[in-house]
Amino acid sequence: KIREKLCKFQVGDEIRILDTYQMIAKDEMLYTSTVNTIKQEKINPEWALDKALVKANTAFMDNASDFFQERRADVQHVGNLILKNLLGGEEEEHPRHFKKNTLLVVHDLSPADTAQIIKGTVAGFVTEVGGKTSHTAIFAKALEIPAVVGAVGITQSVEEDDILLLDGTEGTVIINPSRADKLHYQDLRKKYEQMDNLLLKEAHLPAVTKDDFTLRLAANMELPEEIPTIKKYGAEGIGLYRTEVLYLRQKRLPTEEEQFQNYKKVLRQMAPHPVTIRTLDIGGDKILEDSEHSEYVESLNPALGFRAIRFCLREKGLFKAQLRAMLRASRYGKLKILIPMISNLDEIRQVKKIITDVKSELDEKKIPYDHNVKLGVMIEVPSAAIMSDAIAGEVDFLSIGTNDLIQYSIAIDRVNEHVAYLYEPLHPAILRLLNQITEAGRQKNIEVSVCGEMAGEPLYLLILLGLGLTELSMNPLSIPRVKKILRQVTFKQGAELVEKALACKTSSDVEHLVRKEMSKIALPED
Ligand code: PEP
Ligand code: MG
Image 1 (cartoon, helix red, strand yellow):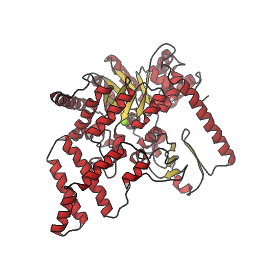
Image 2: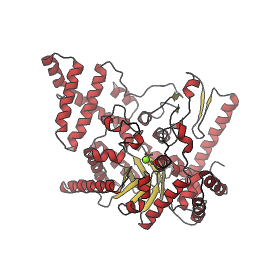
Image 3: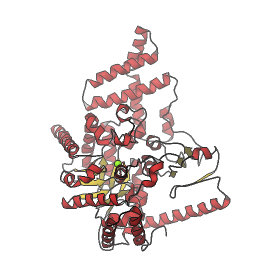
Image 4: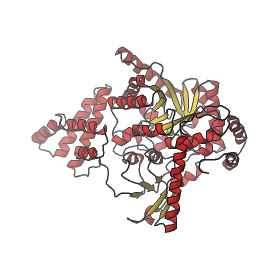
């Protein structure tokens, strides 16, 4: 049934996975074993299936090979689906049908739920929970779904079939708007679209300042279906591919082969531009409730818990499978590997050792790959930012994740709407950290980029430029806006602003300076 429904939505590659699931469901390991247990032990089917799953799990566990570890996850997933059906549960794996132009108003929507929304099925959503750098908000942007998050109490104020006006740019929701409101927003929408079209005409001009400083403007990507948009908006590569979204969408870890095919497609389509693929960053707010690995990620403070590289260094089989998939795909374009949530040098050294092992295995099997693939790490944990001079000596590039760096430095949970007001990219402490990281990159002569949401905000461009970053990676739709400003300013202007900003003691002092300087520039919204 799931397969038939998905076919209607033309989701492509996902269908093949369901074919594999069907085969697993009929395999003797699950099917025959369950039926035999019912016959022999006279127990109910749910229990018998559960026994078959435990047996299969143990058998796979005994074999450490990555291939068997991947099959283990598939078998468990299929088994759990059948179990849910036997227990009379609802199947969940199909897109919900909504009336045209439906807006969802919900208490919360997890990043996993958001990643599964298929474009066109809802017109937008409003949540009570969340901040603008939460992954729910980031994924909504990537899927081009208008959204407002952190609208405290909204589910109490909205009734089914109310008319809502939603402005994702300003974060406004109007319930049962007046005629004047409707006309005003229709007009705003028209102006926004006109501005978008104008900006698009200049999207492919070089990203260079008036004094000839080049800043690479790259795209953040969550799913390969974004590539046409990424190209249309003039990205010079992918600065961050969040590979965990594939996992969240499929509700299971993709196999090595699926990852290889996926990366190969992306690298090919983006060549000759670089594609920075980040290894799995699951944990934090990015978990599946029924995740096979949920014992690792369920904790009171998930953001400080078993996330990203911490998870990968424990689940080495999974990590190696992903690295192998990346390296195998590397010959189809220009791959850069990025490691998230690094908090010390030891983790980097462990990663490098694992990559060397994976490369040796490929060499042994005579599997070709690009021997010059660059390795970089995310600087998003304060300890890594403070140690960035040492870290810069170990890797080929640094990528600053401002979403997490701000979360961890200012101690504000990204998904907590009550502290969202403290999210201040211009906080002097953040500026000092950014300055320290870019300086470390300069000393070791390696590239430093920013790939957090801060990179796509036009207001911060002059500061980021002045800090001497080499790349900004952002939601593709922001690229033309940022480029328009970049082409009107000078590096010198940015550097002078940074010098003054670094002497400030409060965020509002910095913001005042920045706004004053930016007011001299014709912003795309003007
Ligand atoms: C960041 O932390 O800024 C980042 C880019 O990574 P993510 O948003 O996926 O945590
Ligand atoms: Mg991060």
